[in-house]
Image 1: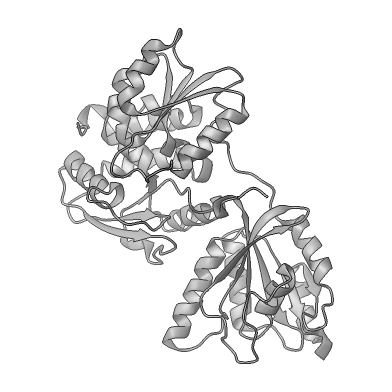
Image 2 (image 1 turned 60 degrees about the horizontal axis):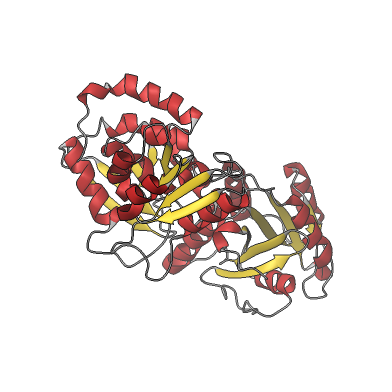
Length: 418
């Protein structure tokens, strides 16, 4: 079986109060005792993830979580982790206990699922002890899909699996590159090898772009930025598309003929996982930042920071130079996405290659609800170095948004980092 990265698998999160049988249900799904099951409330503390094949759908990740009714200071931290896990999910299974009415916490979770547009169903567990008619009435009022199951007696599990498989959202990610190139097109992928490059491998956006280009039967050339000019000079005709790492954008812009389409891996990811048009629109906010404004830099993965780290060092430095303002930066990585986004004037997000599109869309929606503009690394870096609109030209809607930005900020007043 092919190794499918978790960021490309559908995430199914199991949520509910303590001791309703979430862990038992996850174990029943995978057919092994992965999650600890106990009569003691609060056995599950941190989210537990398990990759599996859910046939006939394919690869998924199951996530067991702490109870949403946990107590105390430590319990609240566990609940916060559960909420974070919900934000990563493409689908949720809310597990209820058959003998009791719905709690306030369970009703609040349903409201949150609806707010962030995560599809879900309700699994009414422990039916071997009887079913509360009032609970079924509450579920009916909510017009929620529900199944009555017993993990203890293995009743209804297979039917639940089949229903979840049918309800999982279909693949709706925009393409990375397949709509930009055709069979026989020549594509150059520019991959700098510097201190930030992982030893012995390429980063995920580069690999995914390479594979998708190959799937379209394009001819792909991978080259370092230092070899790009030689590659272009040796081609009989200009390439059809060049995609580069954002940090090499100035060198690449200077060496790629104007008639050749050019963009960056990060801008491809902005469209693939995020909202490229909205990110371009956020450039209007960039030009209005003032001394003392607080900016969030959000990275989806956790990694050892390099001496000249792109998120922690280079982007803050470039933005301060670009605006000549004393800006304040907070750095968050992994699933540590702040709850109080209203404190920030701007969110600068990485390409999001290590999280699902659903999780990125939830982050975008949370920012929009609080009217906090979000932009991604690639759009901002290219803009600060004067490579916009060149790198946006392959994308019609992004170019239309750029015209609005240009009119709003007055391009003549903008100074670019060189």
